[in-house]
Length: 134
Length: 134
Image (cartoon, rainbow over the protein chains, first blue to last red):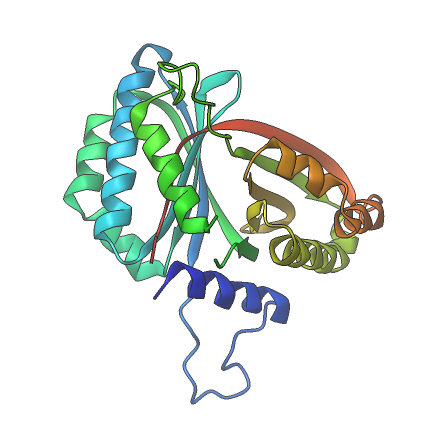
């Protein structure tokens, strides 16, 4: 599945409202739903560059190696770089569960344990995921 | 510029660290930098469906009509749908300024004024913007 096609399909889901395809026809399976969430982290300022390097390595490996990891947008708050936000989109729940078992994710998680002062995972429901198709 | 090429170029910026291309060669202009930010909104629950419809319309028009609007990912917090988060990526500052002047943005802004109870704009610096290239 291309990134473009996911975005378009999710956008159409958004337009159609919260009803699931298949709701009127139990014989038709519901389509898989993307998992979209926002991670809010506070990093130890004295280890910020190490953390950023580990995060970059983890994101690049995830995007390159895992078909179901669609988006990992990591940013820091302007003027307060120890505050990190990651916007995450996985193709479905299975892709997310698979991601947690990869060696690159485990390496990141273990390697940054002492750098992350707090972590809040905000689970979300997409309204519309709009992105350039070309 | 395709969405893919932007993501790759930003990812490479991220790997290279904060130094700007051109720093070693003053004759070479610095590349434009994307504007990336996170909007955190609280919506009047009694007007939530109206707000979501206005937001969808605005995002779809922005992505379709504005070359410099690259990503507008709108989600609601699971279990608390009046809490909305929008992850925004513009090609550069000029694209963002231009966006503010469009009729669809002005319509959204005016039309939803009475629905938005609070709005926090979190300006950010990209660390790495990872997304599927295909």
